[in-house]
Image (cartoon, rainbow, N blue to C red; front, side, top):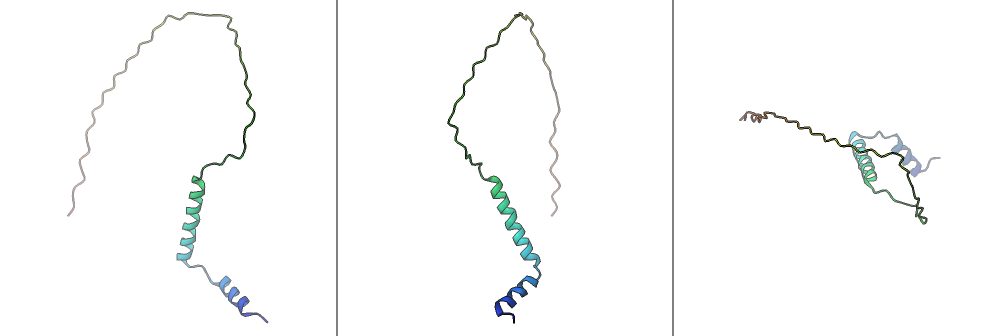
Length: 89
C-alpha cells in the first residue's frame, strides 16, 4: 500500500512546470552564475622561495646611428552634427 507522503510526492513529480516557475528558476540560475563569475580568484598557493638569476650579454659590435626621422601627418575632417529627430505629438 502507498503511504500518503509517497502519494503526494508522486503527484508533485507528475505536475508540469509552469512558465512562470521556469522563468523564475532560469533567472535565479543566471544570476547565481553571474555572481560566481564576478568573484575574485582565490590564491591557494604560498610562494616561499625566491630565485634570482643574473644574465650577462656580450656585445661584439657597436654601431652609431645618426638618423633623424621626421614625419608629420595632417588630418582634416569636417564633422557636422546630426539633426534631432522630429517631435511627434
